[in-house]
Length: 510
Image (cartoon, rainbow, N blue to C red; front, side, top):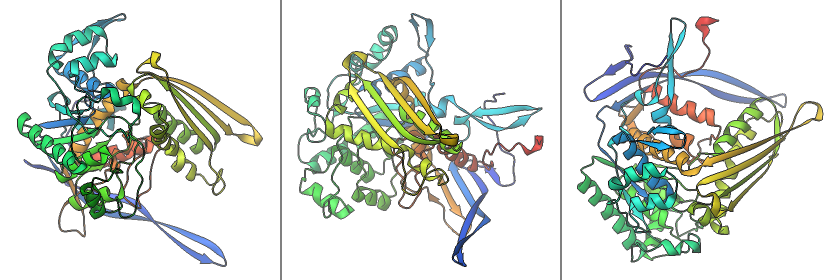
C-alpha cells in the first residue's frame, strides 16, 4: 500500500514552523580487544548514543549549474525536467509515452514505514523530509561548446524525435556560459568542440566562475545553487608536495598558473569560495588534498566521485550477494563499448585510466568483509575494458563475467549482458545528487554532549549510493555495497523524523 504523505507522532519529534526536530537514539557497538594467553579476546558492547536532528522546513528555490551543460547528460536532464514540468507526452513506435522520473531514488522509489492490517505500507522517498520539487529547478551552466540546449539535445540523439520537437521551443534559447578548457586534461579529440572557452590564467578562470555563479543566482532569482560536474572525464592530476597538497599550496599554485591544476579543481574551488555545494560526477581526482582542506575550512559541501548508473551498480549488487553468501569471486572481467562523446573522450589512455580506477575499486570493501573465504591480501582478478564504437551512440553495452569458487572445489560462472541507455540512466542520478545535496545543507545535528547544532561533515559520504568511487572523510570506511549505501541514506533521513532504521525483523509476526 502506498500513502502519499505521513506525520510521525512521538514525544521525541516536533514539527515546528521553521524546523522538524527529532531526538534519536543511535544504537551501535563498541569493540575492545585484549590479548590473553597469546590469543586475541574480543568483546562487543552494545551502546546507545543520543542525537538530535534539526531540519529546516522551508524549501528554497533551487538553481542547478552543470559543468558540461550542453553534453548528453546535461541536455537530457534539462529536457526531462521540462517534459515533466509541462506534462508532455509523445508518440513512440510502442504508443504514447508520458514524462516520468523513473530511475530517480528521490522521485520514483519508496520507503517502508510499517504495516496496516497485515499489509505493508510505503511512502514516497521524497516525503521523508521536505525536498525541492524538481519541476521547480532552474538550470544553467557552462560548456566548452557554444551550442544551445535544443541543438545539443538533437546532437546527443538520446530522446525520441517527437519529444525533441515539443521541447525545442523551451530549449532553443538556453545557451551555456563559456567553460574552462585545458587540452592537457582531456582527449585531443575534444578540441573541435571547444569554441566557447574562458580565457586567461587559472586564477582569472576561477574568478570568472565565481562571477558566473553570482550572476546566475541574481538573474534567476534562486535562493541557493548547487554545481555539478558532468563534463568530460579528466586525466588524474599529480598530487605534488608544495603544489596541491595543502590549501595554501593549492592557491599559491593557482596564483602561479601551474599546469597541474585541473579545470574541475578550479570549478570546485570557486564553489567552495561561494559556499555552494559541488558534486563531481566524473572519476578524476578533482578533490586533491588542498581542495578538501579548503572545503573543511569553509564548511562547504563536496561530493563524488563518478555517477554509479549501470555496470558498476550491478557489480556492487552481485559481488555483495556472492560474498555474503559465502561464494568466492576470483575473476571479474568487465567490458564496455559506447559511441557517445564520453566514449570518444575515454578513448584516450590518460582519461581511460581515471575511469578504470573508479570502476576497479568498487568490490574492495565486499572482499574485505569476508576473511573466511579470502586470505589476507587476496583479491579477485579484476579487469575493466572500455572501447569507443561510434555506431551504438548513447546505448552503451556492458558485458561482465564473474567466476567464483564454490563448494568442494567447484567453479561457478555468471555472465551478464547489460544494454545501458547511458544518459537516461545518468540524468536521474544527477537530479538525485543535487536535490539531496541541497537537502543536506538544511539538516543539522548534535550529540547529547554538544551544546550547538552543526551540519553534516562537508565531505558528503551520504551521497555514496550514487557514486562509483565514494568520497568520504579521512578515516571513514568506504562502503560500495549498494544495499548498504541505500540503507545508510534512507536510515539517516528516517532518523531526522524519529523513525527507527528499517531492519526487516518483523518481530510482531514471529
